[in-house]
Image 1 (spheres, rainbow, N blue to C red):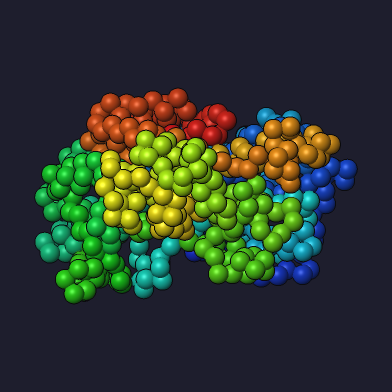
Image 2: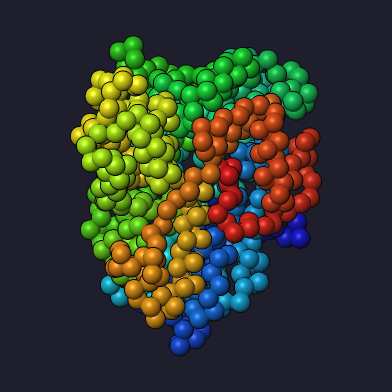
Length: 568
Ligand code: FAD
């Protein structure tokens, strides 16, 4: 079974390695055949993508009254939180993938999988245009059209290079299993190159300089994994060059891991400094050549300097796939970063099209009004003001309902909204009552951030589960259009809107230490959190390879999808 999994990875990798931007530009294929339906009596759901969102939808869809067609250039699901561990061999690639056909074969729903990429969505005619990525000897048969009754877009995102010159050509990315495998080979190649007798000392230093651009969770985890890999394994194998190795993290902001609690950020920064990982905060990368990275200091008058490097990982966030951009223009969303949906995950401006995961964002237009309503409800004497205690209750309510508010405050190193209020109203906690106007002013500061859920597996998986449950109950709901009694007040919608539940997040920091930030301001850093992290994944069948050798084992179960990810 394990070796079959490897083949799956290898086959799917063909022609699709530099994923992020290698996706072909959309083009209309007018002569391509339309794929027949299996059963004309059933409504057809087309799912684009086999990542966290798409797979979680498939796993949870139980209604046999639909015909489902999955289209994805990847015939397997990949457990992305463990990709950094694959780069250094702590976890084998085969342990974090599961063939999609394996997942769907166990279902009682009629599901077909086609390995292809969608190039264009024609929402007016309920059709999508596809292109197989298995290009050998298909003699033009690689293009086809699929019609749908419902379309679920779950295609994730591209890497975002911010159009920085030289990044695509010279940097590695870490989004796919193939990326992780390529990084692993490149790290070893750097050590081999630096061990060649013809290479000068200066050149050895350059080759063994590993630069990580972006101090978010992926960059930090990769730097930590690489540091352990070098110090525990490679120093023994390459004793002659071990003292020349350098790892640098380049971050444009003032801190790394800035979406985590301040205690975690400080711990990570101090740990890295102790271990000799070079942290360059306030450094923005402006250009990359094959041997040098050019950075601009955010302070010190914007001075630009060049830094020689051997291998660079670019991990600075995500962007929109070209065919999604094209679709967004079609539906009047051309100026957005991601596909906007309503709170029922339906794409705005389209009928029967849904978007979930990293490619989507919920347009919570009413978020401010909702929050103001919570405030008014707490204001029992109708005075327009709240005491500190009442205020704390309101904040708790808001953070439960909109976890992104809490995440935003954390990212700004604020404990809660009282800190934000203090910034905007110049009051001190304990002796002043807050009124609704102060409160609204404070909220407007976080308004745009509140509308965006974080792009994580946790959000994508929860959206997949939610949408599958809606489809499972769709007919029942159509028979009772008013919905369950308790929702009749809202009237217009058949289902409760999607609500994200933030379950916390982990940041593995290397050296058997992990930082965990769980709801309720609970922070734990160290070996115990590492064990918590191990147990979460061990419960999913992931096998660690302590000496970074190939050990069998297959990651298998994802449960109900809603509680997986290293944000668990
Ligand atoms: P993806 O999982 O990216 O899936 C997209 C799918 O769409 C893929 O199957 C792809 O092949 C397919 N696709 C692409 N183009 C097309 C096309 N044209 N037509 C059809 N299909 C297409 N999140 C956490 O919560 N916790 C973590 O610890 C964590 N760690 C991470 C570590 C790394 C290294 C990375 C890269 C991400 C991590 N994330 C983590 C983020 C998480 O992986 C993403 O948020 C999640 O994968 C988003 O799910 P998705 O289904 O939207 O997209």
